[in-house]
Length: 199
Image 1 (cartoon, rainbow, N blue to C red):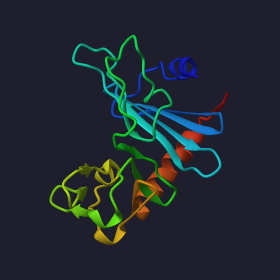
Image 2: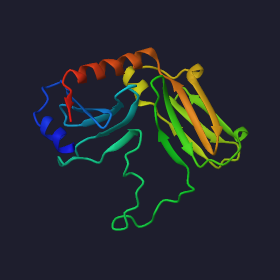
Image 3: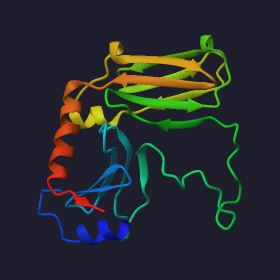
């Protein structure tokens, strides 16, 4: 599939205009967008629900080589595998694991391996920094969470859209998607599907 995408996306995008292609495969809509500065964004949506399963991006390096992929949403299947030929140490299975996994209606983050009781956590909006902040009363865990989707849409955080819960050693944080973001996602999928290929 990677070779198919590479071949389809080979032509340069017009100045100021990104080039997008959509491929249907493995029950997913895989949308690959290349921008005039040669940066790339790959998004994968569930074919039935349109839920965003993966979003990753990369930019060329200063010397023109492909940069490293940065995962914004979801998790690539190989991201947690230990490679003894490259990795010096395997990550501890007891460390907190942070993962964003959206639903059609919410941005959602899961932080696993947090064993403290629910009463210890505080989850708030930092309006000055435009970040969600997670902290524990015992000062054992602290995390700031960006929502690039809101930044791209020019929207601000709203306290009333933020909810969270903790159970089974997992902190689940949800932020209701504004209508503008939902509409932008639907438009992007619709435009990509016009050029969809079946693999």
